[in-house]
Image 1 (cartoon, helix red, strand yellow):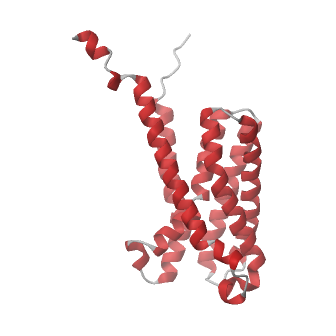
Image 2 (cartoon, rainbow, N blue to C red; image 1 turned 180 degrees about the horizontal axis):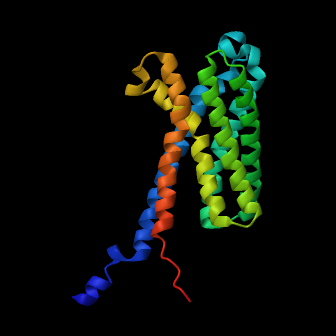
Image 3 (spheres, helix red, strand yellow; image 1 turned 45 degrees about the vertical axis):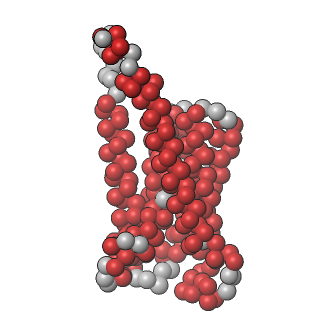
Length: 224
């Protein structure tokens, strides 16, 4: 009986690792699906309809908008591949190449977002929120890049996680702005200003708790 309990596959570390990996794959599949749906609904029409009616208030600043959405789209679609190759340790040459593409996408996106923030027609509070998002996007990505340049792989992974959480903030903004109970909150201006911060601060806060809990649960090194 005791031997049977010890060899129970359900309690083995290998089985738990498989379940965790399967859950991780499901989460990433869901995130990719949401990201693709976001791009199809909110991004592509700017490329398909290059005119003042489609761009509306952004038409005078269409160059910055195209910079922003193109960079963001590249970052959104590149990061999942980065995490997959980083976790498996396979095709690391491709991993490094797509990492540069991710950094390039973020750089272009941040330039466009910064210009849009300073020239916004939706009020200074909203512009300041977008500027904060752009700063978080640039800084988390820069920290991930600096960590891997120093050979700090685990720290690099943590900062890449933060960088993608911030990258996904643009999707989160639209989800809570256009769907569910939050989409009905009034006035619309207050909702936009709140979401400009909440779309990345709240997910990043939750991510930080998870990262730190994982770090604290690791066994401490035994004193020599």
